[in-house]
Image 1 (cartoon, rainbow, N blue to C red):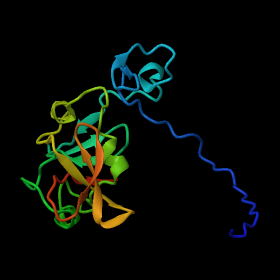
Image 2: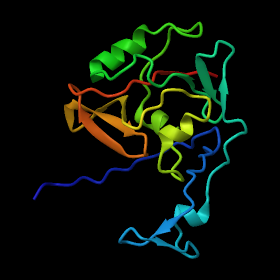
Image 3: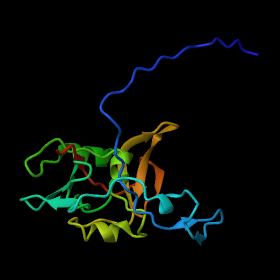
Image 4: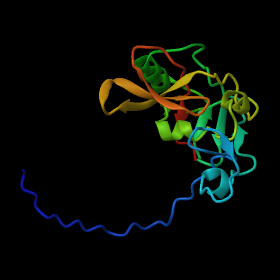
Length: 184
């Protein structure tokens, strides 16, 4: 058996206050088998409705008509969620975003998985259709690349499927590209 040494960890308080997380949009609760149930007393998100409401309007198309600012996260997205008109490998997606010059900005990149998931509303089954009514165009039902590589395997990266699922894909397959920048 290995020797274990006691370690004391001291954590300094973090200033800046609490992070206000957005509502997920989830309004239904489920049993262990996946069937819908009443929410009272479950403690599930459908009952609690925790988080802050999205600002109204949440998404604002800029004056060029090519970019959309998310007033909840401050991120700026390309309005066209299928800008390269088709799918790309992960490296091609990274390169496309890095070379993009749009709306007067050249600091475009692939979103990380948290940023991309921030667009997902878990209260709907078809986020592509919803986002296409919120100022975006070309949002596809398939998967979008994130900049986040899988820690367990450098040959894979995280993807977000527009129905809300997060998965991983081999970097040599093709997926959709949706560039983002820091925005506000």
